[in-house]
Amino acid sequence: MVAAIREYRIRLEGIRFRANHGVTDSERDLPQDFLVNAELSLPATVLPPSDQLKFVFDYDRVSSLVVQEGTKQNYLLLETLAQRLIDRLLAETPATRACVSIQKSRPPTKASVDSVSVELVGTRDGA
Image (tube, rainbow, N blue to C red; front, side, top):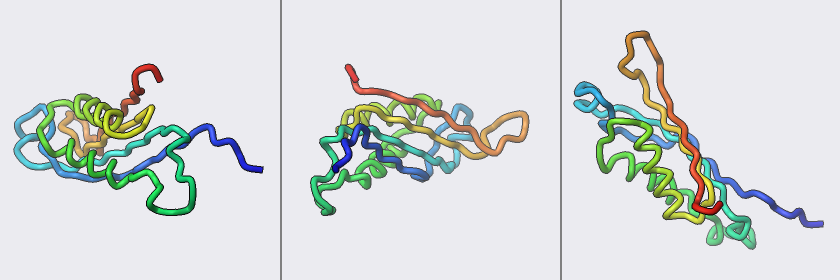
């Protein structure tokens, strides 16, 4: 018996890059570390038809896309960056749903905070 696959998800955790995102001048003066987790829901038709690397979904392309978008320009808000990442992931992959979380270490807050993260989930129109 062969199982009927209902969902196909790819999750990339810990995509790292350095960039100058933030609202304050001090946040934008020196590059900071950002950590991105991305989860894509893909149509089952994208599953490899056989156990060969040439048929698998190219998740290296996803990590490169995240780093490219995260470093090509500076954003004031993590929410804006997360939205841009979702837009690109849905536009440039066969994904029907994308979940992106972005973590920033040591945000400028009055209290001591180790990190802040923002998570957005987006779907392809009509999905």
